[in-house]
Length: 183
Image (cartoon, rainbow, N blue to C red; front, side, top):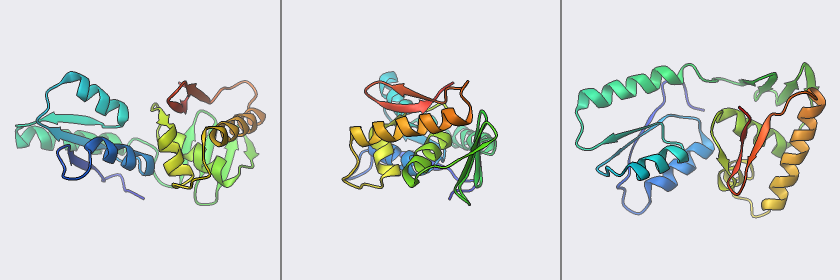
């Protein structure tokens, strides 16, 4: 687990692997800020990187003072997000130390994969978790996960959360991409 002082500074021009793949892999496993550095000035490329989970983008060449200021801002912002073993979203409280979930004041029993799925969504509020990101994080590269498996787990998770609070919708589908917490 990363502390509130963790941050990744990532140069896109790496030998052997694309920076985009690394961003997806890191964000699937850890909710840590990523600042990308690159000589690429293309706005479309920057937007794509933000949609993958990059938190900031610094174009080369850059001034060290600017980079240090951006790092400081990201670290400061990262202390405000959910940290530790307890995550909260609306009236859901997820405790990863004892694998408990309370929704609408009611204790909710979740399977291992349902818990991991809810935890991933809660660790990435406001962000769409892609299907590949979910497979890698929740099923940890197991070949048993496919679209049908994911859909069944999402459906069961929604149903159990609905039992906790019938008046609230928590998870929304981003068609063809994945899922995210409803805003």
